[in-house]
Length: 203
Image (cartoon, rainbow, N blue to C red; front, side, top):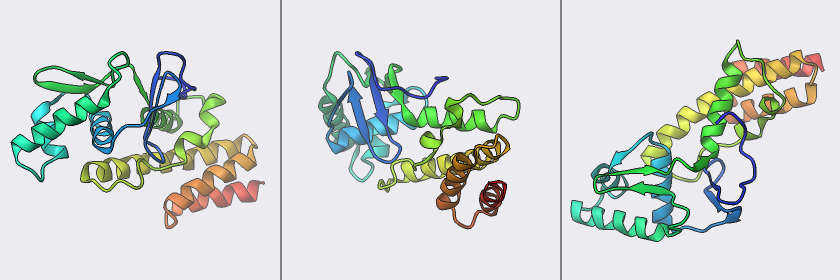
């Protein structure tokens, strides 16, 4: 994806994991039970097709293999929406359906563009909204914690860079906002403090 996510058009599926779990299908909010939420997010945080046994063991590892497999089948059944599949399933593998748009992917692609010195940012690149929040901040599973930390480090570096770019462009209000987000994400981060101070001084 090269653009920031837009409100879903008819037929679109949008999975949001930044800030909290939200799912929209055909533009309408959709509620999933927690076991189905965990399955969809696990697949979204892992690239490509995964073995069913691996998914079941990772999500329900505190039970035996038979119960874990049963829990996975239950979660798949509770996904529903056969005309708008969230997950591609075969006898051996599972994967997130390629048609599902994920805000985390857009956030990390934006961060990488901002960190690319050869990239000239567009106006949409200069909006910090996709970098403002953590990945599933109230989830405590190990597989979320590791991915959250990786995402945080990437987005905080991108916010610092965004603050610097906006300062150089004379867009001081936006620069300060980006710098404050970077500092709030990690208050002891000296590079974020310097970027924010520079924006204030320039303003």
